[in-house]
Length: 215
Image (cartoon, rainbow, N blue to C red; front, side, top):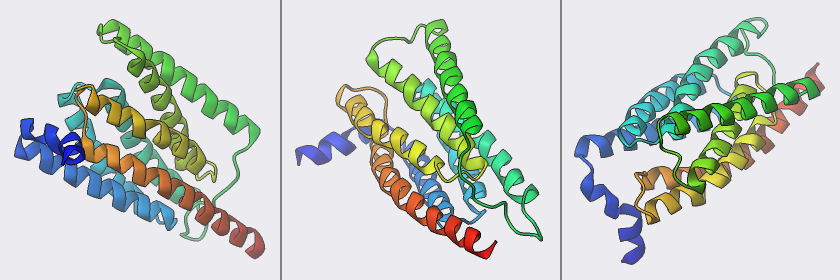
């Protein structure tokens, strides 16, 4: 079937180790997101394993923007793990809160600074080849901002990440179609993450309302 060959045909060129590492990274990522959906701090250890594996794989495939995203995710996972515990009360996790205006300003600044940094990275390594590179800068900035909001337990982080995931779905399939180094299973993962982000927003909103009613 043509669509099967389109999605999985590239794997004939990859080693068994690379495929197994990608599958492991995806499984860890899915588990991490499901724990996040349940407002459980175990989101972070599973996320740390996933991001480290993706950093290794993306470096091999020369996908610099995606590699930087996952490197940042690793740092934010460590920070978020600390923040969730440090800012809680009576051995509970820090509460979910609404993003304030000044925090939106900070998140926007993170997104813009990240996009500029990725542009410099592409330019300095002479890999600025097409519009794909510019979309990569955009999604990297969005994900950086979203992950920072998640680490600080902001409800709206789900919406920010959902935008990045939705943009990433066609981008990854385009990379596959144009014979870019890309992971088909990871492209499918972004579809799953887009759906989960919407569900996660609704679920965290319920958690937030429960916090308010118990306050």
